[in-house]
Length: 252
Image (tube, rainbow, N blue to C red):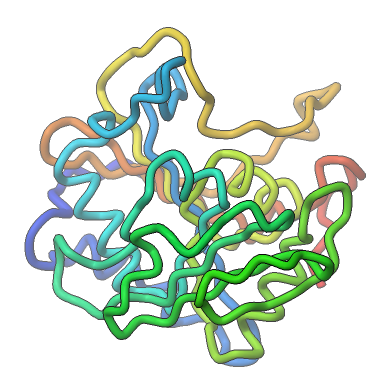
């Protein structure tokens, strides 16, 4: 693990350019998917009461917005929309707003929410084949299994619509599903210098019996202003399905 000290806030410094190099180096015939989670030292993204807004510091928030500025689409689950009503826009750094994609297998959302703001960015709802939800956004209907739309189908559908670089921003269940099924190329973990003690975990993955089955990405760590640490995790060497436990299995 390589550790570097630098600020990611403000204008893009050389360290940030290096971090974002993989976003543009991916071959044009395949998508590039990055996950992001901002959490405490003990791996929490919210308290038991759901408070989460002040966990990440200013430099960490700048980095999240810079990721958005480097991708074509940002994905969140319906629960994130209900609980947080995020804007999913680029506000803290220069750049263009990505397409806002919400996964809602059961059609629980309505036409409210800041993600539906008419600001020129595409708004895409990914929902189940039998869902009757209508919220005014572009709609993609895909088959769901046990209430989950497979990440592979979502990525393929977005890629076919010209959205090559994709950020999976949350929540924990959505991000964990993409990681578990081997559909993340990169994972940016932003760790804030605080200990919450209890609350919602940033990742929720199936248990493993032996450490040899654990994911061991190549990692570079960067110290940000304010004390947050960015762990840039390259998952390209460890894509396999947790449930299958098959090491080295490449995603289709």
